[in-house]
Image: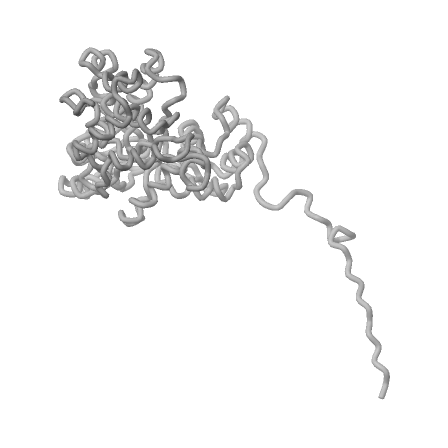
Length: 388
């Protein structure tokens, strides 16, 4: 039998000869022009990961959409994985991601609320009429509850929400590019102080009211969380206060349940009742910083909060940077409401520093509560919380 010979095959290194290595790393490369544009938009804002949604808003507000080049540049600038940037931007309905092969969306986006109250008020017919008549001058979309159930049907032209909207009113707003919110009348800081506002906060800070006396008053009042679970507020405060410092405080004003607009009403008419309640709670539990997460569908409430928080800083009632406002970006309309309800809590988590809420074993302790729960604290104080 003939002896079999084994031929030795020499493997060539891929960087040798015709198998050249790729000249650039794998994945999307950072475009220098896009990076310059992103840096100009962000300016001197911190590049912390808890500001990711805020930074995405800044870019979209400037350019009308989020291009792939801008997302890649943002990932580079924030030192985050592009996948994390993309998964955040693609989750929210109000962010418009544009890939290289696609064109930018129309300048104006019209969102027609299709929630229960608006559907009963004729939102379906209004949506059909707008899609037919506006043509290419605007993009017409259906949207989940906008928190304007008391003035249905609601339509948002950009960030301008039209109450009791008609096709003619929407067409006029689109033609005029009236995309910014109109602020309603509200009780500002001076009027609130004249009416005795911030008396409870001052009493807590001065020691006239002890944290224990405030929590006892909450227990006796029966005040509960108004987000659905109905957990006693006093007990919740005690649990947080018992945790090691430092602590943080978060207010969730991203209500999206059909028929629910209480947060919006309080924030747009009497913002300092909510702010004082939040500041008292933060003082009692020993939280150094507070965060307010406001849904993108409430641009007027957000603008009012920013103005009045600045007024509080100027008046010396809060330290600069003690209260932060974070902006939502619209829950995905194709998600079932049950899933949106749970996922928007993750948005609140995303909007505050990571070490705050994600990991119970880290050095920060915090609590999240609905905005409407805190408007009752100053009112209860004015009507006579038990003194001790």
